[in-house]
Image (cartoon, rainbow, N blue to C red):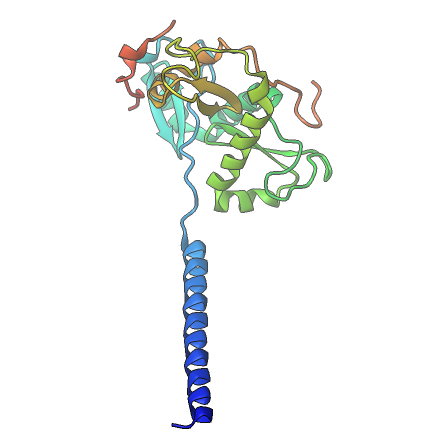
Length: 252
């Protein structure tokens, strides 16, 4: 084979190899893009019921072990007894409207964002912000049009909201010990676990303590001095040790 033919042959081999590599990279990119498009929405299991009153009667809730705890459309509700539960089931919308109103008042002082989590626009820039209580968590939008977009992938937006809570409340967090166990945060148990409940930051010594705080959140949240509390945009204003970590969340 002449020198010229050898050079041409070598060039053809190089071109073929380059084309093969480019095709493989393109296929890999298409696969990654396709996988991203098909990935399921992130899950948000919801916050526990955070009011200290029966949603039907308005009376103070009794001990956790005596409550009737249910899941309704993915959100937890707690009642003092079966009679309250029957009344709720007769007209859920009426009761939930009162619950939502109370949760908005409760969580608004701790809400960390002044922008819409969906559009990024200023809250109040398009009129009064739209408040949604989703699985016991307050979410605020710049307009009603953002709510359907949120509901397509709520977990993604709640994760961003959680990050904002940690960012705004973390530096002002008032405790150096775990709310549940009393253990020093960042001690032998390692880095603290950041948990967001009702738009409030709670720092725990370990994942095992999460079960206890979800089971009886008001017993622990009352110990916080509202870290990072502020008025919402456009608005005026008993301990368990590590031996108890095995107890789960009461539900029926």
